[in-house]
Length: 396
Ligand SMILES: [Zn+2]
Ligand SMILES: [Zn+2]
Image (cartoon, rainbow, N blue to C red; front, side):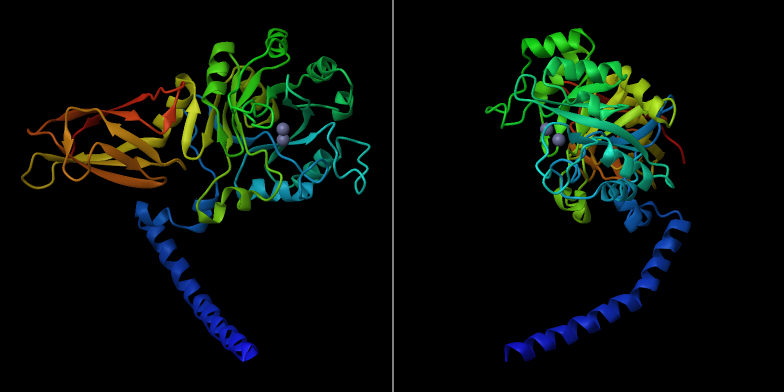
């Protein structure tokens, strides 16, 4: 009885699969046609567009998407380094760092790992025929203080395997590494989840041996870490710290995304990224929030959002404004303009890769309109959201 039921279900699902496969060419043809016809809503729904992480370049810099904190079986991760490269290529990242725990080696019985550069070497070979930039990193894994820190742009990770914690930071510094404080809010090391500096951190910062801080690690955001970054001129970093599979940890098939650091770089190269980090030009994307200094995040916002058309339809004074968002972030805005809207309230969503229509009651026919919004999904300091100002010329 059980077996027959099972077979019946199998036969049904086989028919379902056949039907879906038959429908596929039509669906992709429709998508291609919609893209060719310039329908902005249809183009957003292709599979590739949903998966690739996309932020537009700013007028001054390239917007490079980077994940500077990843693990493999060469420390406590669960995958071979080639999988990290394939995931990064699927996410259309520009750069990843492989950052194994230098001291913590739970797979040592199976993988003796005498050379701490091994995972990087394998990943580099896997990325050889792609555009992906792979950085050699290491996670200096210590109790608090200082906790865990990532050194990236290393030339030899083995040199960091020393007893004295300051000596490990100095070894990284002597290789020209960029070192940032990992998960300062980690409840295993801060039971209250609050990131706070200790004298050792302050001396490492003063000596140029600690230059960034994870404001976002894996699923967490730390507004206290953001304040530390602003107070001490540290780079604002967000990473996945992935140990398992990116798709499973971040629900990518359901529309989720891993945290990334958007690096505003003058060149698409490791050196371009290093220079940008030295000058703190970063924006973090996490759970649809964009987090960064106003001077860095606003150029990304302005490159992402543009008014494509504004006109008075028919014989009304209700202005139709079309706003396109070409980025992967959904922007959440609060209207602070003197105008009310015909369809929406004051909370406005601009979905990714989509054109949103706002019907603005301007009361009289204007030749141009100035609209302002508080950007609730953009954070420039703890509790601080920047203002988006749109100056809209009215056309036909
Ligand atoms: Zn860690
Ligand atoms: Zn880690």
